[in-house]
Amino acid sequence: MTHRIQFTAPGGPEVLQWVEADLPDPGPGEARLRHTAIGVNYIDVYHRSGAYPVPLPAVPGFEAAGVVEALGPGVTGLAVGQRVAYVDGPTGAYSEARNHPADRLVPLPASLSDEVAAALLFKGLTAHMLVRRVWRAGAEPWVLVHAAAGGVGLILTRWLAHEGGRVIGVVGSEEKATAVRAEGAEAVVVVPRGAAYDQLAAEVRRITGGRGVGTVFDSVGRDTFEASLDSLAPFGLLASFGRSSGPVPPVNSEELGRRGSLAFQRPSIIGHIAKADPAILRADIAEVFAAQTQGIIRAHIHGTLPLREAAQAHALLESRATRGALVLLP
Image 1 (cartoon, helix red, strand yellow):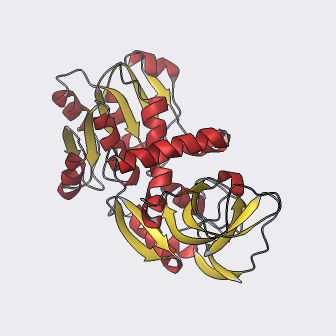
Image 2 (cartoon, rainbow, N blue to C red):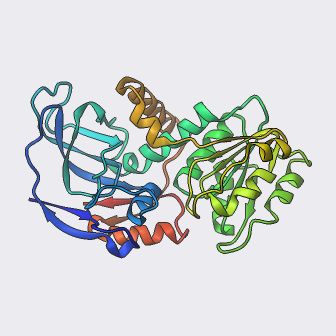
Image 3 (cartoon, rainbow, N blue to C red):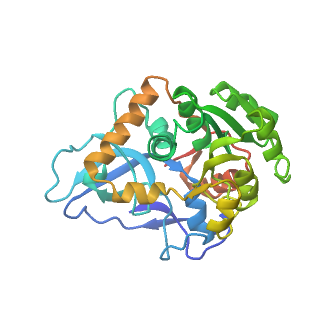
């Protein structure tokens, strides 16, 4: 028997329940892991709330580190007792132990703790996707990053700055502004929680000498959509990769043209990971690990909580009070 966090209906953090469950032996191509650290990501909130519906009952979580306890038939390249991590589906990471496809597991280097791995993989791969596959670095160096003090935002800010991006971070407090500047942001705009973003574009244009930014990385969604578009330079790109405030309105191509021949993209880390060849995924993860080791990026852990307190972790994440990642410990 093992324990896990489960919900049987969508709703607020209170729907997350600590339950006991059976865990069968790993099947063909699977490995059984004893989790040591579990990453909390905003997509877990989307699943729990029903914004991204999943079959019920459901166990949240895409990201965890752990130790291999058993191998199913046909599994090679792994050993019992080996430290590994994963960052993809199916969901189910909010558990003490689970079976997972063995070919999606990544060995952890000795230099990386389990907690750092659980804070880094999903968020680091998201930043990797945005920097390597979305950002048009040669078009315009100014970049606007929303939620810049969040788990993805801090990593993304530091990585962009390392690559020559001139980052303007958007945060909710002066304390968060200090953290974002420390990661290399050239400028920071504070928009307190609950305030409107109606002055953001004007401030962005003041900072950039009237031109605007070449790229906006927006994980907020509905509340920031208009301000993001208004912050772009001609032929700029709005990369909307999250919706913490709700979904963005329908995108009108004629309106994009009128605003300055703009482009809109909806990069999805889940789609990117799911469709990646295992060898490509491991190469991307290796680059993220190397960037962490070299100091190009840094995993920031806001705090750790026991797994059974996952509801509190979700409430903290949705409060916008966190700076960096939350990690659950079984």
